Length: 110
Image (tube, rainbow, N blue to C red; front, side, top):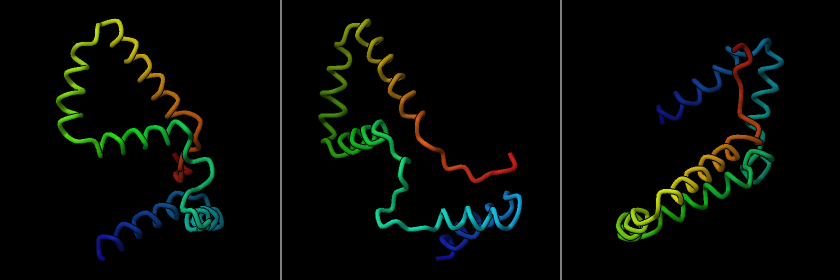
């Protein structure tokens, strides 16, 4: 319980510390603490992020032998140009993942 209280005190005190005035900090806190019933703010999760979450869950729940032995053996047999194309697709996916969504940004003075 003390870890949870310390974390929340630290997070909430940063809002007051970084805001220009008390009214701005109240607006930020009301936005942070507002509940919409779903637990997610609109626009925070893009389709690329949903895809990354789905891939991570699928990887997490695959048997260890499939992911670490069979998939690795398949990966080692791929030709170099195909590996380059896969790397380019991965970096393109990361670029799409990191762009387009609003960032949670509470530090007004930086």
